Length: 268
Image (cartoon, rainbow, N blue to C red; front, side):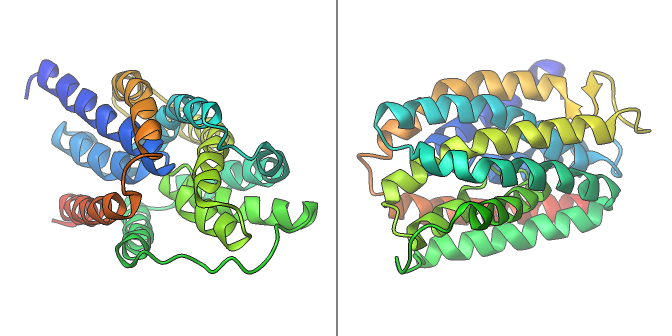
């Protein structure tokens, strides 16, 4: 495949990532990691680093995507900034720390963990499982602990945290639209801490292709982010108009197919 066609593949991926990030508050990593892994393998990049690069590049792209998404949700008054302030310290610590675990894990181990987690997310979406709102938000210490957990898992699967933070917030009596909007805002500190962690841990790693900074592959980052920033506001606007439950179920099927494709590429 010529470089022009690789660029088109990254641009198409960016369009899908931005749209679903805005629509569902998920950050886009669920699409990016399996797709980038598949594209990196097809480009002949080293098997030992393709998942690490997919995670790092996804986190870096989510920085810009989450900014566009949170601005759109903030314009609709859907972001609970009190929750964002309370959970961010734990998010930063958990996300940055987990990148050190990811950098020492094998490609196969990371791929299996990612696929298992996305299978859980997909089943949750397919069944439309919603925790019953049964309590209030915890105090400062509890919010920090929740942030560490959400940030840690998010760094290992390169997501904006929505698949964890949205159920947590709805369980704590936060309205669904506010939970989605707040999740989009929480995705920014997750992405920033994750990007710094993957930059630091991948610095000087052997076997990386040209135009790579740490575990971030710059051509994919620029092209995916450029388009995703443009499509994220469209998704955020549609989140307030379309039957999100139906779209989540469709998206869940896509996630499972992408994960199977990634696993086949690595183990096949």
